[in-house]
Image (tube, rainbow, N blue to C red):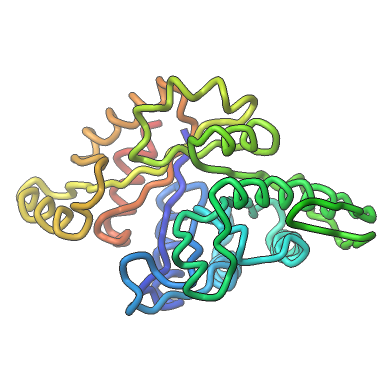
Length: 288
């Protein structure tokens, strides 16, 4: 099982991001994923760094971590811009870039910033067109594409990525699952829908399975009550969290691995304190 750190860059300074990314790398995490919003969900008054700038900053200050997002919002960027961003970062950090992308989980955010909200169906259809265009542009050959939402008339981009860019698509809707089966290397299951994993797995086709999982790690039994209370205060709105000591969490993730989950994006309820990442690495990752 691979472990990636999900690290929303809300209320995070550039230095704080690097501190946690380096701690994750030292602890044995294979990758890191940021979020992508124009305004932080449920926290519009909080500062947040832009997704690609933050990813580039982290890639420049780490050596091995695979850098990605859960997930980029398709409507924020024209596919030609996104294709160039991905290929450029891959040239700077070869083999360390993945593309996590979705149709947008907060449509009201689009309207607030003057971006066409469309409908869930139209946003998913547009995402499908984006994925087709990205594959074409990353070939280095001229692309001609005429869709209902996107159009490319002979556009070409160089350089091409150093490797085929792994694509992560999340969700469990029927149209999304069609895109997963057609385009994705990884199908990411939201933590609150893990109960649908077994039933939905055949619809994912060849895509490997990842899971976004909130984690409350008890690093010291003497503080269990205090840690749980704080996690409930911060993340009580979440319907699913993994809670426990290192051995308890190791058992939890072993159970997920037995169900076919090959990667977990861990979202720590203490905002990925470096000491927690170190202990998680020693007690959970190192034992895999």
